[in-house]
Length: 336
Image (cartoon, rainbow, N blue to C red):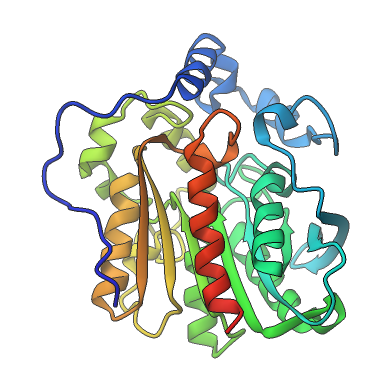
């Protein structure tokens, strides 16, 4: 068990100043209220969900470009209620059987796509020398919990079953995800343990949403970052309302993996935290529970960064160090 956990006691009231590029993003989002899910009506949300990012375009100036050494192909897999789109990344010119990483995107279960992760997925593919399978799961509020869980579980099983055809080794399998995708990573990892497979060697949880209960509001990071860049408390409330039906059990660990009664027997974890994120403390609480259960866990915290910083790599310079830490951990787990 690693002891690389940041302190949980009171923090200085003087939070580190965010870099200029991140502050610019915050200013744009504050002035353009349409960027916030809290200010979108149903029609605007539906339009944004249907908006497909082009393979090359101005969005790459913010989201980042995948390395030229990595190619991507689009495919699909049979999901519980129809085909699910995939993006499959692989390093060019690399021969032999490769490790495989299944990736789940963020976006509050209501927004986002596999395409938005091109920069990070490409870095993982190139740095680890792995096939990366990124899935577009069904989005809320049209598809509420547990639709995303069912789709991500289907993607994990499909990847394990089809690994050989993908040129990958099903015994060298990892999962990763950011924000809502971090939640889905934790949940599917628990499901795989309980089901006796697929065998997962490593889990990467990037500023994960591990606690969707009212307990989240007791966290200091939630209280200190009410109007945080990228993700505000108001946004969190709206995302929760879209994803969780009134009839759902709030104590279901598939909603809040931190409520799982037993975290033992899980694969090693890397947990990436952002210091200026309302979800920072809930992610740390999950890391602490993993460590207490005997799971090797490493926490990488970037104190000046907001939630979602790996999605703006050219403006948030710490994204490079975070990506390097993720690649190093996955390479260690998957190439032995």
